[in-house]
Length: 375
Image 1: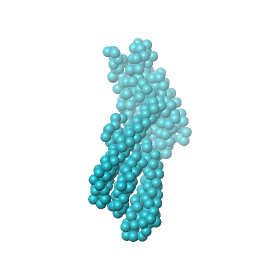
Image 2: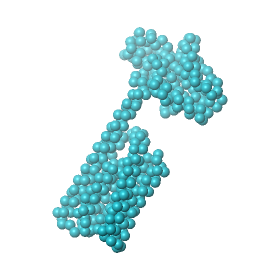
Image 3: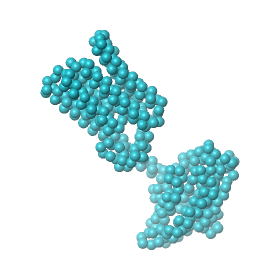
Image 4: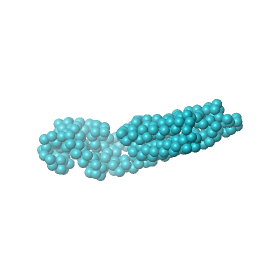
């Protein structure tokens, strides 16, 4: 998972989407807190303007600007509530509120030109909020904060009664605030993604066999099998499992050593994964040299065909190890259920049935496939 250093996102689009999906609930929770705070902030200042400045056209305009920003923030809360699972909507809402907050503040500063020195402090706060407290893509935040800062400096130069040195100092400090905000947000984004990468590594280690990269037996029984059976039952689909076992594997270890045996296991695991559907089928190292394939939406004929293809591919391609060719074969047991017609509890012995068929294939001479439709 390499990262693009400028935008602080994973270079791989799929990895970045997975990261965004993983943090979506947390991102929306942060947005809700920030939007509520910003709404209260602008509403309080709208009330204070009326109390301190009295009624006038300018006061009405100030109040309208503050209420508009608060309204956009509250509207963002409603949109997030209605579209809690959408990453683009979440990013869009964050950007719209940032733009509204920055534009509203510039309007307020223009309506109170005598207070640009005080406005500069508020502008710095707005910049920090955009970069750090409103979760958004870093490039989006920079594309909003930097032009808003430039607009504020232009307004101060044209409307504010500031000396040149004061204007220059203000511009320098606000530029520094943008740089600080960008660096701080960049560091935060990198830390989040480093943490996510570490979590994914640990998760992968917990569900994968380290030698072959196939799923492990723990994951099979804790989640994988139950999920696929429940799905097949719900939609009344076919589900097929294939139990496979390398023939005479002990002889491979005795002849070529455990390194040779490991090479054969890795080759077999890679073959199983390459000839099954990525993201649909599951390959599990069931134990030792036994591997289990779970094939959703696959009938008995489809499972038998795949098992025969695997059998031929393994037998026709010896495993290379330290300049030697290791010839290896495997036996397969295929069990299938059609949940549209099967008994309610037919799946309970599905793996056991495939295991029995595997040993029938071994007892029948090895390097063969045995199948059965479970009813």
